[in-house]
Structure formats: C-alpha cells, structure tokens
Image 1 (cartoon, rainbow, N blue to C red):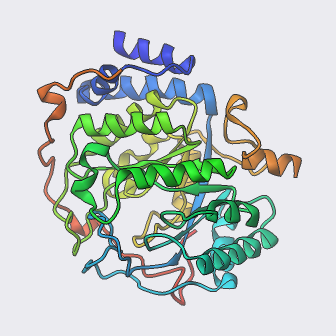
Image 2: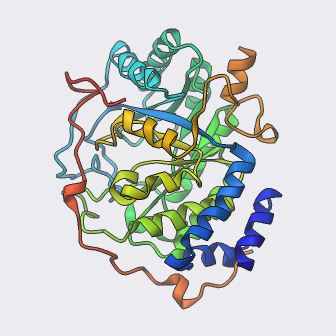
Length: 386
C-alpha cells in the first residue's frame, strides 16, 4: 500500500505527513487495519523499541468543577454519580502514588478539578510533590491543575514537577461546541507556559465526541506544532449525567486507526493510550501497544480501569516490556534539560472534502454498562487499583 510505505518512510525520518495522508489513514477499511497497525508499529519501534511506559493517576480533588466541559463527569452541572472530595492531604496523596509506583508506574500524574490553581493550591501541590519524591526515588511527577496563572509554572517546576499536562482535546474550530467557560487559546497558552518554565509538556486529545475526521487531524496537527513531549489519546467515556452521555461513535477498529494516525503525525513523541481504552478497544487493547509506547496503569480520575495486574500481563503477553526508571523515555534528539529521565540518570493544510468533514454516524448501541465509576483508591478507604 503506497500510502503506508510513504508514511513509514516519513515517520522514520521524523517528517510530518500531509493533512491528506493523515485523513487517508482514518479512511482505511477494516480489511486494511492490520496493515495500518503494522506500518505504524514500525515507526513506534524505531523510536521506542518494545518499551511501554506506565503512568499512574492520583485525583487530588474530585468533582465540583466550575468549568462546563461537556465530556467531563466533574463539570459544572454534572449529574454523574462520581466520587466528590476536596484536596487530599500530601501524605494521603503520597500513599496513593506509592501504590502506582509499586505496580510499575514510572510517572505519577497529579490531577485536580477546577479552572486553575490558586497560589495556595500551588503550595499544596508542591508539598505533595515533595512528599512523593521523598518516598519514591526516581519517580517522575506530572501536574495537571488546569489553566496556569503568572509564575505558577515556574513555582511548580521549582517544587520538582517534571511535566505539566493540559490537553487541547479537540480542534480549535469546534472547541466552543464542548466548552464555553474557556477557549482553545487558553489551553495553548498554558502548555506554552509549562514549556517556558522548563517542564516537559504533555498535551493530547479526546476522540469520540462526535467530531469529524477533519477535526481529529486538525487537533493532532495543532499538537505537532505545539510540540509536546507526550500526547495522551483519550477515548470519550460517555458518563450518564453529562451532555455527551449518548455519544457512542467509536469501535475498536476506529480507535486503532486514530492511534495510528497520531503515531504517523507525531512519530518520535510519547503517545499515551489514556482514558477509555477498556471501554472502546476492549479485547483489541494489545494491538494498541504496537502504536503507543505509554499507558495509564489502573484507574482513571473518576472511572475504574482494568486491573493493574491485567495491564502488566497484557504487556508481557503482547511481547513488550515495562520501561524502567533508569531508561530515558524519549529518543536522544528530543531530550533536553527538562527531560525527567535525564535528571534521574544524572540526579499545509489541504481543503476539506465533504467526506472528511462529515461527522461519523454512531457505530453501535450505547453501552453504559461498560462505564464503571471509580469507588476505590484516592478519596476512599479502599485500596487503589495498581
């Protein structure tokens, strides 16, 4: 298939594909799916071998967010029956993080609901970062606290945060359809603040919100231009009680095509399989490891994930290995002063076609039974899933 040969050649040279080529990946048939996975897998192995980086989420503050992001179970007006609690104490957060590290996680992601942190919140998170790093040598810390104010990125970096996550989520053209309380430019600005402060930038997308192929390509190309070190790919978890509860557009095959497209556009970046993988990829999750080089271990912010031991078994059964703390995640040409692993080791847009712009029809009946609200771990008396 000429398209795939071209994309592999470009990926091995770190050359950006054309927008039409990216759209063509999403338009491939199910009969071509394994060829697409194999081609993107060559690019993945060139830059990351057979390593899989494990990340672990700790939800520091759950629910009651003033923002109205339609996809989020913690949004303003959400009726989703999720756990709601205020800030975890640093010691409690450290204990939750330790469970993930013991399960093999190399990075701990500290997340808090809200528009953005106050200066007091930054102090609180800084104490939490210190507590985690004191008890877990070599662990990377990524903060995800919303929109950053002046000087906050620098303070988080000084406190020991290695990375900052803030996703673009969808295309700039359709961002207003999923959120009205902030805009696409706000998100771009926060990612750039994190980069300027010397933190590794983490920014990705959510697929399955009713977007078109063109929207998916637009947001991935926007990410390529922003140049984060890691790109998490989330698949919408349609929580009952949120505006997008009826959005069931994804099939396992479409998810794999989306991941392949992201890999071709961002060949040497840490592509992370994030929320929704169990819901939408289901039994095809192992195939995704040929496309991504990073996953979340255990549970997510407000939903339960696959058991940690099953994640580890899946990685081993598929012929991959868990990446250790003594191994740099990114290829050498991408590593700089902000690279967490190095710190550990040293201490043309084409016009849209009608088909590309069309919103895909629902692929299957809604399956709310697949969405399990998190009831364990942070904010509860039950042990976490790690």
